[in-house]
Image (cartoon, rainbow, N blue to C red):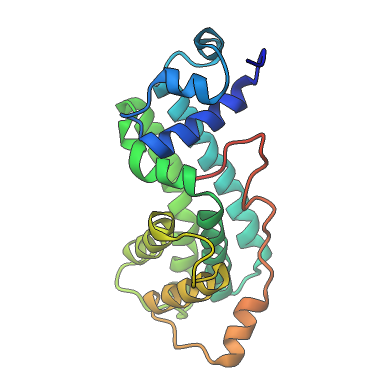
Length: 222
């Protein structure tokens, strides 16, 4: 057994253990074994699996939100282009990070009420990134939606569900998903069906991918 792997090794182990067993099915001993640490070494960093879950998910949201802002800023001022960039990034992120995605979708409600309330603020911040674009596009007459918040939630929901069914190496490529989900998003927002030239413009914009998959030393994003 290695002398120490530290906090990040424990968070990686917690991510993988929660993803495979679920929060309720995982024990603190399971996490210690996955991290190749003794229980006493794990308890030095985290007093419970609840502590590990909260730090794992909250830190992931913070990193994800920060990089999403960079993606939006790089897309320029065009609202449809910003939506396309954010959707494309989110699709890539979900494909690259299925483990933390499953944990977020399934296990965050296992947090204590006070921790869940703090996490809910990070979730609102994450949803607000798209909602702000949708409201700005609606005000500019570029989007036609009945309810901007509901439209935003609908777009995020279909993207966030990707890890529940998608498996790399099949008939559907990541590029197929990017294109299809971007078109779905624009339809939800009431955009006119883009022509060939518009599609080329939407997908010609490079999307920063430096944080699509975080480094092996960090737990991945939400």
